[in-house]
Image 1 (cartoon, rainbow, N blue to C red):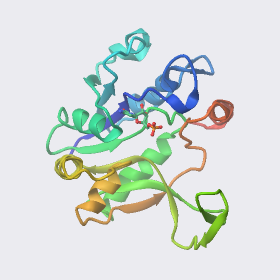
Image 2 (image 1 turned 90 degrees about the vertical axis):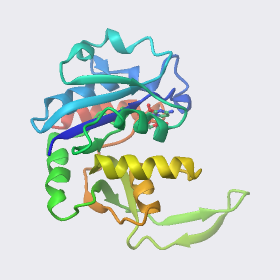
Image 3 (image 1 turned 135 degrees about the horizontal axis):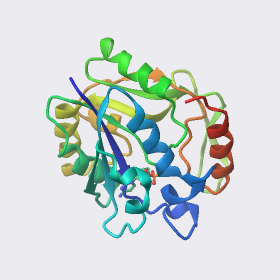
Image 4 (image 1 turned 45 degrees about the horizontal axis):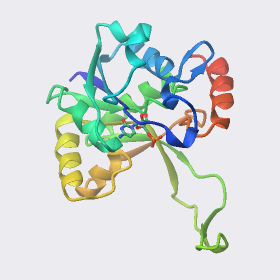
Length: 226
Ligand code: C5P
């Protein structure tokens, strides 16, 4: 079965406070999105990359990667899940969908391989994730500590997240219709009663969200042997 990468890139990145969407900010000479696409487009097993763009996107077609023969563009939606669903509509039914945030430029080919190999253990799919290291606190409304949350078996969900395209499409669509808050693909699968696998991923696969993250991404991109 073929593997299709799905890239939600239709967000406006309001938390970054920049003059353009965060995926178009430059790190080491090219945009965050260009770094992300380079990795996905260069992976041998990924046959197609489907990217969801904002309707008012005026930056994408200036990227050198925009004309790549593996690349297909679609219009994204109001929420991340809507953008992913729009892209899934263009993926072959019998493929695997590898969904990866545009804003995670430090992904390595080795981590993609690790997730692809995990299909043998997790036929309904799996996600890259990282065990929680810090002590976790739940806060009250005043910003005081309410409770210490046990960190045993607690993981950070990363991307890529890999699922059979037809299953993900069906459950994501149903979850959106039911009004469930879906912040990643696994949550739609969980909502449908499936327990996706957890595959330990690299800690430097950060999602660029706040201005400080740009410096970190630069450091990691320099260091990571792709
Ligand atoms: O805002 P956040 O960092 O959670 O966004 C994660 C990814 O989802 C980003 O790559 C962003 O461009 C994308 N997104 C999208 N459509 C939306 C909102 C976010 O494709 N409506």
